[in-house]
Length: 86
Image 1 (cartoon, helix red, strand yellow):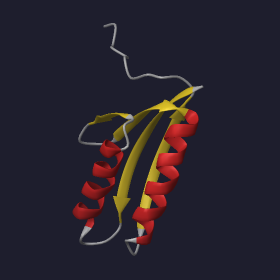
Image 2: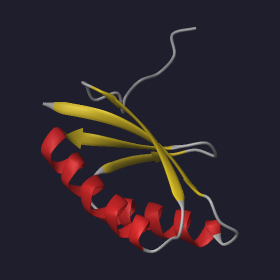
Image 3: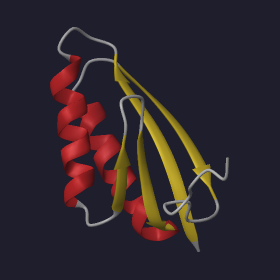
């Protein structure tokens, strides 16, 4: 089963940029399909692979910061090839 996950990561502290950069770099290194834009990062792949990576990297990121917020949306399909039809 493939999924698409949209993540918006917001460390709630002054040195937020380094935490976001490190989190995205870890996702890039995972081998999963990643799409980045200024507002969110999208991850695509099999459910087990995506969730295993996210479980590890979210926990690691949260352990390295004082306060943080992560919004996550999950769609049960691989939407990596989506293109608008209008």
